[in-house]
Structures are given as C-alpha cells and as structure tokens.
Length: 141
Image (cartoon, rainbow, N blue to C red; front, side):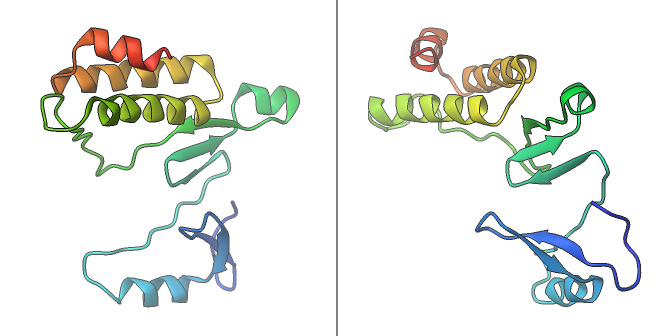
C-alpha cells in the first residue's frame, strides 16, 4: 500500500492467495496476452480487496491496531443463483445456502456487515424462487 512511481514495487494477487511483487512494465506485458483479461491495480492507505474479501482500517484499527474484514463482490457479480425449482437434489440446495452463509460469516468481522450481507443474500434467494421457510431453516443450522 504505497504510492506508485518509477522503480516502485507493487503487489499482485495470485490465485494461490499470495501477493507477489510486480512492476508497472510487467502489468503492461500481462495485459497484452489476451484482449478480454486485464490486470488492474489499486493503491490505498486504508483498504485492499483480494478475491472475495476487503481488508480495511476502521475504528478498531485506530484504537487497537486491528484490521477489519468485509465480503467484497466484484463489479461483474450478477448473483445468478440456481433457481429453487431446478432439478437439483434437496441436499445440493441446502448445502449451497449453508456454505454461502458460512462464507459470509467468515468474511465479515463486524456483526453489522454480516447481517447486511445475510439480508441481501436472502433477498437474492427469494428473487430466484427460494421459499422463506427453506432459507431461514437452512441458514440457521
């Protein structure tokens, strides 16, 4: 998290979950490989987004030097969950809801952001035909 400039080393995220140094020239080379895949970089003193997580400095950082975590959705995310009435076994449907609920619990360090994300998740499921009873019974287990 530093400013860019000549000779500065930036960080890139790899799918393995590691941050690896790269230079501005290397990013330009990587962006030339395929017309629809583009590598980007963001520089911030307060937050970093990696995969589905945003790590940021909030009130706890200034008091206790503790970073907070929040679920991050990429701009292209359309939340096209499988329709409830598709031909999937009930275990698949319930497993999907349980796992997404656990992921939201793990990627939100504050109760407020977790509850907001759960509310949005439940709303999106309802839009895909999931009955409220199935959502509530499955996500609370």
